[in-house]
Structure formats: structure tokens, C-alpha cells
Image (cartoon, rainbow, N blue to C red; front, side, top):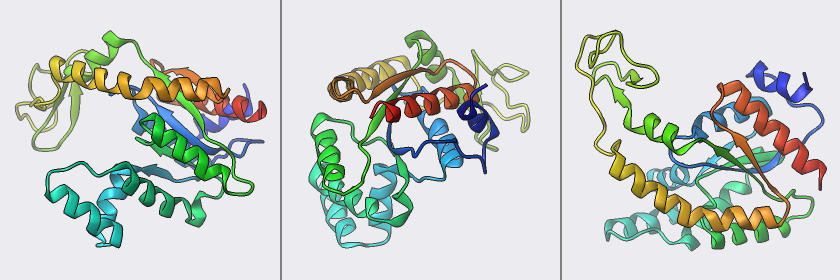
Length: 241
């Protein structure tokens, strides 16, 4: 077994041998487990996960200059423009914990955002470029993951009627409460989210594929195996230069 696989299975406190991860863009459709894998890589490499959603909320909550601008825009019911999100990302990338790399979560989602990130990193002496890893799961399996989700309104335990059902149908094993389905965990909503994801992300995938900085990992495996696949892909892409 390779050192990278052992590291991924080792979890917290372990490090991958012989690789500086640099900036990693995790791609994947709704339900593939990007958040779970980002947490695994944070533990493995000791690098931060950078989510534009988290950045936006933090700037608004901390009443920063950028947060004030974003809040005013959102209060008008408008979308926060790329230029403002880019500024927030730029501030975050200047922090010292990003020196060895970082996990990009939810950004860049579009080709202009990818171009901005690439240019930003290229202007920093010694900075590694972004490598993109896409977590792939069969469409039918994704649909079951999303539409099968049920949660307990009392203890918030999450079940899946197809993959991890409760002992008694529709009832929480712990609290005995009736399980509920989120309003957006429906097939029509999922199909809409998939169309949006595909239309936005396909150009980003082709961008990094053309640059030789793209890989795919089978996401329909145990968490540790998916993490090991991501680590192995990053090592290979970095070795290619």
C-alpha cells in the first residue's frame, strides 16, 4: 500500500509523504460528498478549507468593509458579484495558513472565476497552480442519496430510506420522532441543481483538463478510499509539473 493511501486512512495527525498539496479545487455534483472529503484532506494535510459561502457569512458577521458592501447588495435582493467575492478570497489567501495549500470549496464555479484564481496565483512568486479533482458518482446513486434523506427534528440524526434506513419506517431510532424530508430534497429540485451545476462547471472542468491539471476519482466508495484516491491524484498531478 502506498504512503498516500496509508495517510488518508490514518486520519488526523497524519501527513502525505513527499507532496506539498498546494491549491486544490474539489469538484462534484450535489450529494457526492465534497464537504466530507474536504474535511478529510484538512485533517490529512493541515491546510484550510476555503468556502466562499463561509467567507461571505464571516465578512457580514464581522462587519468588515467587504461584508458591509455584500450585506447592502443582499438586502436589495441581488446576487453578490464575482468581483466582491474575489476580493474576499484574495484577503483569505493572504493569510499564513494557506502557505502549503488550501481546499477550494464552491469556488471557482465558473470559467471567469477560474481565470481569476489562476492569474492571482501566477502573480505570487513560488505559488503552486490549482489542481482540480472531480468526485464522480453515478446519477441514479446521487438521486437516491438526495431524495432518500430524512432527518429527525429532535436529535437531527440523518437517515436515508435507500442506503441507511431507520429500524422502523419513518421513525427515528433514537427519539421515536417522525422523520421529515427537507423541502429541497426532491427529484425536480435535484434535477434543477444538476442542470445548473453542469452548465456552470463543465467549462471549468475543460479548462483544467486542457492545462493537464484535472483528475477524476470514483466517489462511490468508502470515505477513506475516496480520500486516498484524491491524495493519489494530487500527487500525480503535482509530479507532472
